[in-house]
Image 1 (cartoon, helix red, strand yellow):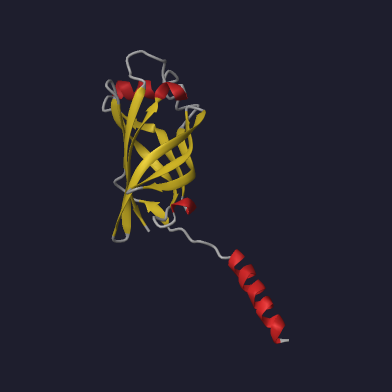
Image 2: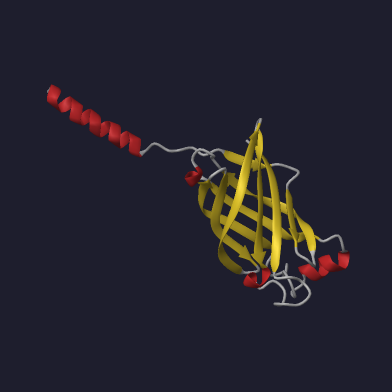
Length: 177
């Protein structure tokens, strides 16, 4: 009888560990975020940003990002430019109201992280890798990222023209638990 107890205990421990779930902290996007874009010819911000962020510095592989930008909230500082950016010549807000990013993988790269996922702009979805940092503070933290996208890859505006192809994005997102 004693000989059976150890194998049965081992099977129960293995079976129990198969159902152990890793919990990843969920972060709430706080006020004061900044989604800024710039090129040699145009710059501005997006004021509408929301989403779900589950991030664990110690276990980045379990992390998930699912965020959206409300394209209608674009602000270039010029009313005519805002109207033009929202038109069907550029973002076509009526047809494509959101920029959406959904992560597929998150990895640690030295002191920083990289998130790779699907970036959907103007109806075009492309795999994109975004380098970022996370600085935790009491009860919260801040994600920061700087990266570029080629607007023509997403069919935003006409290729060439008055606005450069490479658009730099500077993102700062404070979060709370």
